[in-house]
Length: 354
Image 1 (cartoon, rainbow, N blue to C red):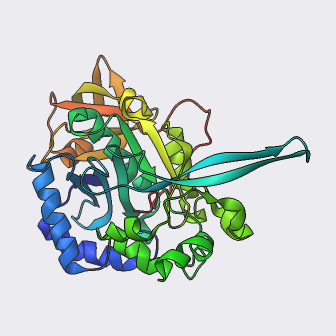
Image 2 (cartoon, rainbow, N blue to C red; image 1 turned 120 degrees about the horizontal axis):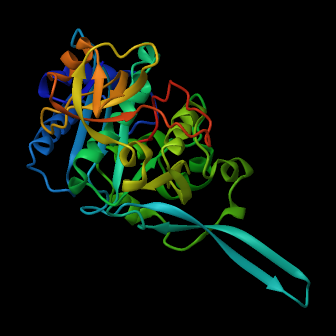
């Protein structure tokens, strides 16, 4: 498997993927025109023809037969062209000594605090490919690209995680809050933001703080929680250094998690190495390996071992990277060695909601 930049020839495969995503991935609509525009813009981005405010680094996962099986992306910066909205979870205290009452009331504030950060987005892996290293490769490959080209991205990276909804795609948070202001189904509002129509948020959302005690119990229980299908991806990102800092999505209250770019494990631990071709051996460790190119970027996950400053891989891995012995690569162990966070599920295939 290889992760590489998207190209126009991938459009039919992307449409097939879009039709299989279901609810929750708003930036991959099953609309050929919109997908064609996004692919074209991604090609411009990899050529260096887009400003950071507009940059859309869209990657695909491809097998050795050339079949596209998944996608993932990095947005160069959010909110620099249009406002980027989240709710910030805060607290308002009401107290009366005379009545012996002290109340701490969680409150939601409409905020643009995450503006300017880079974003992990649009991760989706075909259902029958959620095995082995595929999910982790598709997600974590982006970190090596961030490590190789830090000047293209912000000092912080965020990911909006999919919030709670039922099998029919109904969100308790939306039903208790959003629908009163938008007068439309959750899926419709989610779709409109995903395709770039965000102005209605500013026009219709209340600007004053929202007291969560006025929401239904089901809605309150959703705040800051991820959809069960997204829990493996959340655990994986936490193992890389991401954390929840109290920001949630305005539609389904899913958490927005964040990390300082330079402190993400796969970025800070990555090294520039010389590629060697040989036999990695039984004790080899799965590595993420990047060919250090931008427009012709190729990233894979494969067993490898260190030897005298070189990274030893087998011939098939070198072929996938389109490299020869002696070429430069960037490499990092695929998973964190430290056991502080539970090892992520290999099927971390739908992390961000966008």
